[in-house]
Image (tube, rainbow, N blue to C red; front, side, top):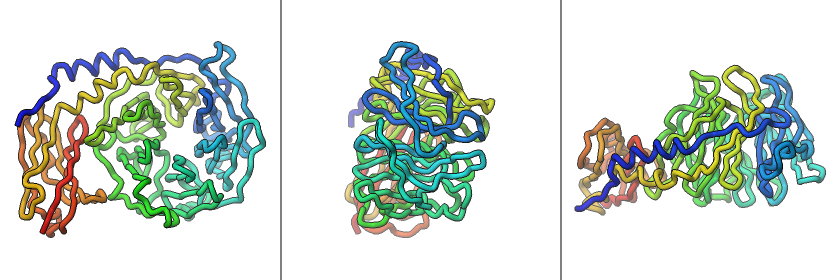
Length: 433
C-alpha cells in the first residue's frame, strides 16, 4: 500500500518560521488594571467585567470597554457597573444580555449568591439567590438557550460543592440542577471553549494542577434529564496538555485552532506560555505558540478581526498587571499545523469486522513515544495495546477482543486511537461474536 508523507525536513522548518513571524506586542495600558475579570465581545469592542486590582483585595463592579479601532488615547471607556463586585466568576453573552454568575466579592472569599444580568446601557436584573450557582473559579459557555457552568468551589460553604456541571435554562429562567462527573475534590480555574456543539475543557486544579483535556458533545446528551448525565471516562480526550496549567484563557482563532494563553503550574506562579490546541479530522494535537511578553495568570483574552488581545492578570511576583498585549495574524501558520499530522499514519484495522482478533497497522516517520488504545464507543478505555518509544517504520499490533481485565469485550463498535508526540488519530472497528 502506497503512503505519502510530508518530508520531515520541511515539517520541522515550517514551525520555526511560523513562530518567528509571530510575536506578542505590548500595545496599551488598561484604564484600570485588574485580574480575575471576565470578558465578552460585541460590535468589535471588548467589555471587561469586574476583577480585582490587588491580590487578595476586594473585587470591583466596574465594566471597562476597549475599542481596538479607536485612536490611541481614546480606546478606553467605562461602560457601566455590575450590581455586585465580582472576581473569578463567569460572564457570557446571550441575545444582547450578559449573564453574570458566581465569583468572589470581598477579601476573604465572600461569594456572590445570586446571578445578575447586564444589558448594554440599561439597568441590570438580579435573580434570586441560588446555592448551585454560588461558585468561585468556574468557567462556562452558552449553548442554544442553556448557560452551562463548569467547576468552581464555594468559599464559605465547601459542603455545597455537590456537582461539577450545572445548567441554567435561559429560556425558562430555571436552574436544572447539577451533576458530579468527577469524584472527590472540586475542579476550578479551568479554561473552556465551545466549538460547534463540542465543549472543550482544559487543565485547572483538582488537588494538583492538571494537564487533562475533556470534550463534552452537547448534541449527544439527554436534555430531558436535570441536568444531562455525563461521566469522566466518557469525555477525556488525548493527548494531554504539554504541561499542567491552570488559570489560563482559551481563545478560538479558527474553526480548528484554540489558543491557550498564560496561567500557572505547580512550579511557576505565572507563565508566559502559549500553546495551540488543534482539532483535526483524526483527533487532536498540540503546538507551541509565541510566548507572551509578560508572564500572567488570571488574565482575560479575546479575539477581534484576527488579532488576539490579552489584558491584565497577575505576574510571577504576585502583582496585578495593567499591560495589554496583542498577537497579530494568529492564523499565519495554519498550513504548517495541518501538515504536522502527516508525519504519522494510522491504517484501518484488518479484518474488519472481526471475531477472534484483528491487526492494527500504523507507520511513523521518526522515532517517538506513542500509545495505542482501544476505547468503547462512549469513550471508556478498554485496553492499551502498547505504550512505548518506537522506531520509525511500520508497526503492527493485534487486539484479541479482550479488555485490560482479561474479560471478553462484548460485540459492538470500538475506537482505536494512536497518540504520538504530534497528536492523535482515531479510527473505528467492529467486533462481532
